[in-house]
Length: 129
Image (cartoon, rainbow, N blue to C red; front, side, top):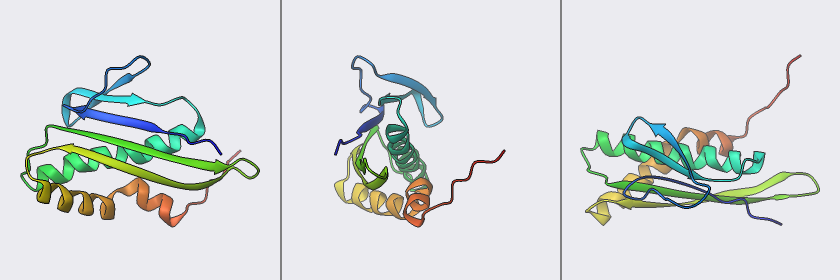
């Protein structure tokens, strides 16, 4: 099985490597960098990484917490016989002063992030004519 890894970064944790694409971002002036191939598998994982990154900024702002940067790496694989996902894992790096505050923030984001919640719950995907 092949892993399909994506990396989304913002602020002080943006990446500047060949192939990195930058998108506008409401929480950071410099935008978000994305390292990902353009395949369906990568895009599914990017949806997870992007949602978590956005929610870290949103929830930090709600808590009055200063965040210098965020980087989310999401990865997973698929059973190539069925293309069923074997699951998605993600890792978050946050440039902030307080480790205790970051852990509480990440716990809240994991519980609230919309895309991970939708994937965990499952969803019908239907083509319409």
